[in-house]
Length: 549
Image (cartoon, rainbow, N blue to C red; front, side):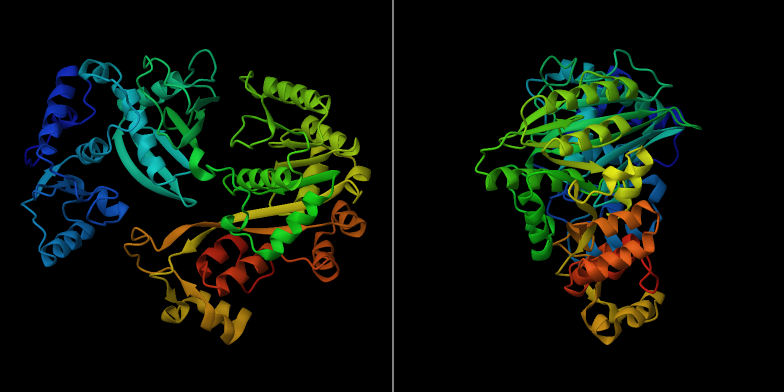
């Protein structure tokens, strides 16, 4: 990594950490080892001594001995200038910058985080399994940040993005050849997938955390806190491949906790969930978009239900695939299907099997088709409690969604059958150490909307995202919390929704059934300082407008 002015594409490729030839990899690896020799540390790495933002980290790298690398594409960037100014003011050792490629910056951080997930891999093994090792490195980096999804877009170059606290964050960029090799390696490493990788087809796969990567001879494992990875392979226009990896974490709930408060639910929501769990028969549906925490909320309620019943009930789940363990439940996976048509057949078969297995309560991972929806209603009709999830915009919209799937109105309109309609979103929580009052941005249009909607009380008690600090990793946010809306419907509400009179149904729910909308729940949390004004309007619409259902 010597200082350089201009490189040809061939030279830049040869300098890359992910060089293609064994000789290039060996030379690159030796140089990286020398950088980290004698306990020399990369102090800008995550969790190291120096706290920097992810945007800054993508542009530069500083070692404890003063060695300093800057991406040649960002040598004049303001973030680099501010970083150098801060370092000199704090009197931290920093040498003259060496300008290197973006791949080499990525390589430094990847090397710093190496070692997680391998066992007994010698130099020859590393060379042979390099792309699988890269797969482990990227998953490890994502798992360290509790990333929900990793997106790999392969076009003229390969772009890697993490979804952190619901937001897409650009992380790394590599060349196209590496990206195509990475996608193939991810497919080949999976435990459950189609027989052959087909670049121009939509394919799904799953990698379990308890088994080594296929083809690694037992030497490569996922990070210990990753329970499983769901992989979706998609062909894309103007590119070759688009891979999305959903990471499921074993340590999200390591002790099988049933605590709903830790997810963000308040006393009101806990009481409503208790009433729903107390009803022995009927259907309860939790709705929301992908990544809204439906599965976690469902898992916690099922654990709580088993505890309340002293584990004296038979709880059977049907999931594709099981996402989180539920101690005391019989979890039936749907894993022997490779395409959507056969998945639907197998899912229906599993649901029928569950109904014949003497259940007291059934949990259906997700209703995706009419046949699955019909069987969940059949379970509720036959004297069982049934809990499931569904993709719908809101709690009232669950009725509309089920009607569109083909469920008969006489079933949807029966309050003895439809017991609970729940919808939720995940809101980013403000860092309590660096948040700032909304009064510091009085010229922003949102300030006027807040004043009109909530008056002086809203102004005095509302906070917005701060500049970031050491407690939140300079992000201004620290984790996420669930905000739900829960409906215990009666016949009038259900009939209004079936008739398509959504506005009257919402007004009836609020006035006659003591309902509280998602926006009202979010406003309560905003006034307590948990979430900021922008986050509220992001999920619930502008404050001076009626909520959209």
